[in-house]
Amino acid sequence: MKRRRFLQVLTADATLPLAQRLAKAAGTSYQVGAGVSSTDPYGATQRAITASGQFPNVSGKTVMIKPNLVSPKPSTSGVTTDPQVVRAIVDAALQGGASSVLIAEGGAGIPPANFTACGYGFFSSYDPKVELMDFSQQSASFVRVPNGLTFFGMYVPAPAAQSGLVFISAAKLKTHVNAGVSLSMKNVFGLAVPTYYMVPSQLARMDGHLRGIDESVVDINLARPVDFAVIDGIWGLEGNGPLSGTPVASGIVFAGSNPVAVDRVALDFMGIPQYQIPHLSYAWQKGLGPSDTSSVTVEGDSYTRTSFVQAKTSPIVWRPTPSPNPISIGAGQSTTIHYKIPTACSVAAQIIQDNDQAPAVKVVRNLQAFTSTPAGVASILWDGRDDHGAPVAPGLYLARLLGTFGSGISYTTSWILVNA
Image (tube, rainbow, N blue to C red):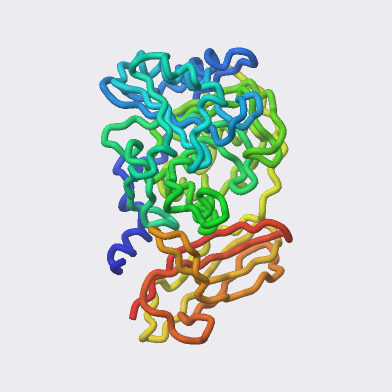
């Protein structure tokens, strides 16, 4: 990648749509709708959508709804999106004049999507305009969308990238052992094409974890922005989600046009501090939504906040900042990698390479083995050399920090450009 393009990515606000950049600069207010019911997910969703006052204009357009059907389990498990929540979204789209409605999912990436097991079979004969789309059968149809934090571009199914598409995230209200929570932004991670993010013998999208799950969540939301977000909390999930954990009869649905705002309201409902979910902070830094709930108004049904048991996550290591960046090998330059941790933990540091087109992390330099590190700010120097002491070749590298409390590892990365 040329230096000019790399600097454009580093100053990525310039690549945001104008409306998003203006919203970030001016401090837009946001509205989220809430619908409450323990027995009527369809009605609760209708009220949440209406209260949001922001359902998009879908007249004559294709609408794609992405539920969370990661496992062949019913919605009462707290793992998957209630089909009646999705039916309410489908009906809103049809009433709005949508030309077609695609309910799209791909399970864990390789197996067939879990439509039947999750109770979505009735959509096959629901309305001629409604179609179930299995992304796992679309593996040869994908496009690369540029811009991101840890990926310069992400591969998404071509149907999700079509011009004029209205994209709706129909997520689940649940905790997550890697990302802290799985809400409307994390739900979109299921669009990442496994062909490009599968590390052998590991999860379907493991490369997104190895570069930093929080950065990857933001990257996929940049690649396929959410036009409207719905979170199904009729049955939520607490503890070690997204697959294990304990179902919670929350009886609530949230909806709104800004996924960051909707996620922050859901987080507040769950009793989880905002700062504990880094991808929401990174999304705010990219101009995708609010920094907290102070600019968010919740309309619709009244509700009482609850307190979800959080997942046992690995420690947060905030995304590092290499400075200077780029560096010149010929000039003998080094860069200092600055980072912050809110809780004492063991931290390791590496310089890696990982091509966007072929997931295969190559460790170029081990800067620091796991070392007990107190909470606060710290830094590590890289002199532009590999583990053998030789100067690295000019190119793109990732500074990667790893954090652990003793079991499980969190990852975070930032790009470094090395010039000759």
